[in-house]
Length: 424
Image (cartoon, rainbow, N blue to C red; front, side):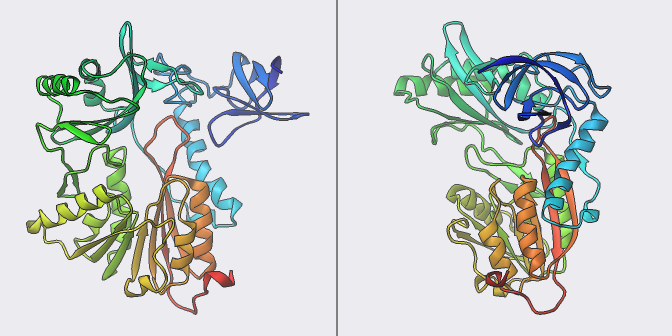
């Protein structure tokens, strides 16, 4: 049952909500800060902020008028210094919970506003036209954006054109997701949802696409038109990603992560790149090592392989590919016997089963990239128990004003008898 309550916020939680500790347990209050006294409508463990009676000295004016309405950002009300301390602290808390040495954490690297080259918008056609933006927090309502301080100017500047294009084939009252990747050839749009455009709608969309100058439009996996081949560069290797491909969100942060990984693998002759995607790390690693890239997404793996074959002048060492669901069928210790280095960059759930196989292998160097400090800490703990030494772990913030944090952990095993995961 909902009730109005006066609460004192004790700390900032892992998801960016203020936490009030009460006699009946914790209450999470979005958009509140530690030290504040607030009035909120509480409903169980969640509360909606009504007013701030005693503001924190770290509270600032949000840069975006949509803040607290749009669900894209959750921490614009926190000062930059306090935000950076809290964000880096997410990794420290996760490692500490697993007994991992936090002195190995390097200074965090932070992106700047207006730098995200990949975004997944929601769109819906209404009687007043197409709405395009992010969904309101805890709601299916699409917030039509008049401003955005996260995505690149090129993406936000194309907002009106994207709405014009979507109006050509979207039915009324059907919400779809629009993945936008900024490529060297222009914006690549992939629309997904419960819609079935007919031939007339597809022709209208194709005509609009030509007029508006987008590189490609895909609807539910079907390429409607691709006037230009969308390409990106991983280092100096040109890659044509498939529609809606996963790309690291901010190019500068991708370069930072790749620099850490390639430097750590510099002495490795053969490297296995697991969860390789389109080749973010594999194609860079191939400058100095023979690489075996393993990925479950067929189109992404095909793009990686094609990029390797289409770039003979880049003096890349051999790159082989293997399509494999690493969650269900991880590379075994036996599979890994021919490699002296392993790179893995799994989804948020981490790579527990794969980490156990790496722990039982003869691999000497590992680079673990993660978008979830909690599952990263679990996976690192498995490797450390097997004799790997954590050399460094670097927080990478490429999702500004959100609780999402990347990290790159570098490990090395110099000798001694390895332990099999079943002994741990």
